[in-house]
Length: 192
Length: 192
DNA sequence: CGGAAACTTCAGGAATTCCTGAAATTTCAG
DNA sequence: CTGAAATTTCAGGAATTCCTGAAGTTTCCG
Image (cartoon, rainbow over all chains, first blue to last red; front, side):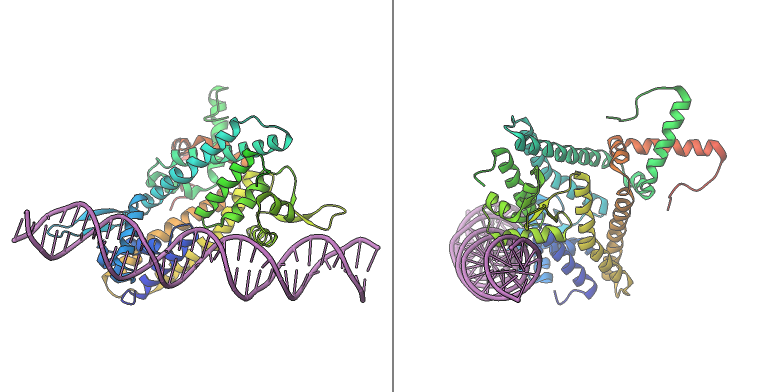
């Protein structure tokens, strides 16, 4: 840790902190931050040395990161040790993180909510609770489906789209008008 | 806790669990889940009773939720106690959560990254680290700006838009062509 | 094969976070 | 004002999570 350039040290500490606020432990956050900025893959001993953690802690942290598909072991020729790196593309990292969180947290939540919605409510309080759960279910599902779909776009398409921000809504209105002019009634692209 | 309908109890337990995976403590998650499904505002004693927590724990939990702007105290006529409720609209909750997380975690991260980018790198490793930080900075900033902008749309506009998913990209292409046909060169709506 | 290098597992101590009851503070009806 | 109800604060014990070193397992070179 003391041997890291201040630039890198601050980054690593910050992401350790952030990790712990997002339910990822500090060590794991720091390890990933280090891999992220490293110009080459690192082995477990190098990581333990750089961050001042025990070898076994690093081993567990890397295992955790692999289970999130955020890094994978990689061999260098003539070296028995495993080397780890973060993907080159930040979008890949972002997407992987989103996919894993979806699988681990969002899907189970949707399953739970769907189960609750199948129950027969007894009384007004339960009926109301169920209605609220339906609203939450629909919101979470909408966001998830949207994310799945948009996640398929490659960054070259997605980035300009995001830079438009809410302007897309205006373009959409325009499209409405044009298609109306062009040939009368038809279904909106993905209306309810 | 034992007096809650199973429907509600499961929901509350699930969100306690989810909360703890997202860096929010279990108690706070459970309190909010309970407020969320409740048909009327609840006071601290009712919450403590329903969830089996101490009164002081509930007090701290509610304070935390207020600091996140997820609930606010409310008085009933002829009752000195404070009553708490979650907003009626799930979008409001979602947006508030996003805004607070942005303020607490994203902004400080961007500040840290900008600071790092201002440093003069000494050596290739630092130059590379800085480049990586720039990529992360740009991604986080893009997502944040996009979110700020799109968050201004009201759900009535936003929901149909989200249901289109990646189709918006196609509409955009169409728009490209039309504006080209309509009058030759002009800037793309929000290109780099 | 033998054994050393690399990696993993895991029991238990360290550190952190959580939760409670008691005491302090605030609020407000009378 | 007074005092009781409501709320908040907070020290310290409880529970949880984290981290380590030692022991165990796997891998593969020679």
